[in-house]
Length: 202
Image (cartoon, rainbow, N blue to C red):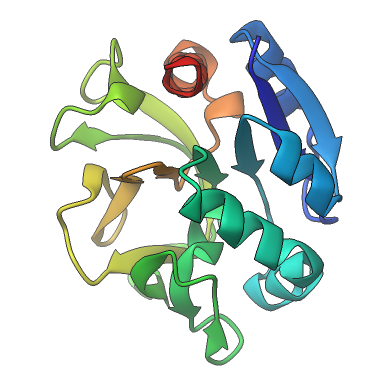
């Protein structure tokens, strides 16, 4: 059973994520310890709330996290966790992210109500192990005001439309990320968590 370290840095309720990963066949450790990240088989970076506070809270773990990714360990970023992987965010001014994915986090357009809360569909753009057995136009649960704008589109696995077409699933080598909450997205979301655990097992 693969060991998944879920980073607890004070931004989000992690219990539903823990249950989803355990149902998917992972042994879950909720942690804020660099040594736990090093010993795990995979890392999950969740998050809700503001980018600036999150990146500050994450800083004591950032070296261990970056080293794990360089070593090829699978990482799944969820919601704000996806955004933290990017070069920078413009939420509350320009803030640097982890720069594991080149690009920016930008505000959703003023033409739509923000935050974007609730169910919306994903349009799968290309095959990837993370979306195996996930139907195109599946509904996922979103809560966000900012969205990813990657420098390159090659890693975009799925898009969603809300005032603008934005990437809702990104994959790059051992990095995987969703702008929605798979743990709150019923069967399609659980399928994504199961696929991530399968990727870790491989």
